[in-house]
Amino acid sequence: MKTLTYALKKEWYNIILLLLSFIAIPFIWSHLPGQIPTHWNLQGEVDDYSSKTFGLLFIPLLNIGLYLLFLYLPLIDPKKRITIDQKPIPVLRTFIVVFLLAIHTWMIAAGMGYEAASTKWIYLGIAAFLVVMGNYLRTIQPNYFIGIRVPWALENKDNWRETHRIGSYIWVAGGLLLIILFPFVGAQAYGTVFITTVIVMAFIPTGYSFYYYKQNA
Image 1 (cartoon, rainbow, N blue to C red):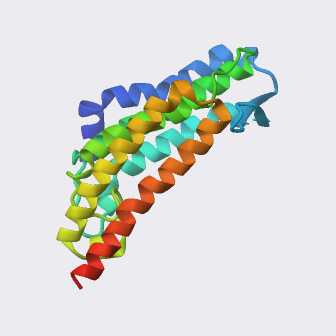
Image 2 (cartoon, rainbow, N blue to C red; image 1 turned 135 degrees about the horizontal axis):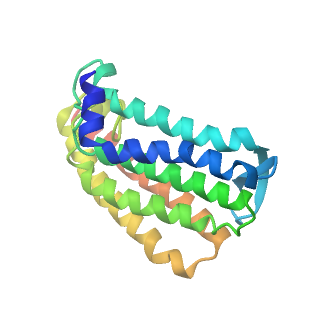
């Protein structure tokens, strides 16, 4: 109950955003065909459709489920290392809500016949989020849910701190690189660059964490 009260008082804007998709359904139902686009390839072309009911309900329900999961993380954390308002968890909750609402709006617009924006914009949004998260990364305390959760970092606070310090620089640099490249790279190539960059951003802090572990074993 305390957790729900916190959400209603401190994150009422997220609650409103979560409800918007459901509020809109009665007004747009008759304007949508029986099948609506639900997946796009790297070229920004629709490559999968779903029923109108599934298309309208799946993402809003997923959004609520993920919000509740991140809201109740402190209750399921076995070590009780995180709190409901610990940075960057509130930022992560809001990003997920806004991001999935934007995806849902994009799908509905495509289903109503409007030309959908390039999938590049989705990657750009994630890149911006990586920059924000990178700034918070070094503030995250050891836990099982958020951060670079390799076993040798979880078992050693110094390893965790150094891993996330390096990870912070890498995530900010990688996110900024993706933002800078956005106007200059085509949709398909940008998707490839995005995936490659994210893999590198994950590999470097993980590799450094293992190196730190071996050096201090």
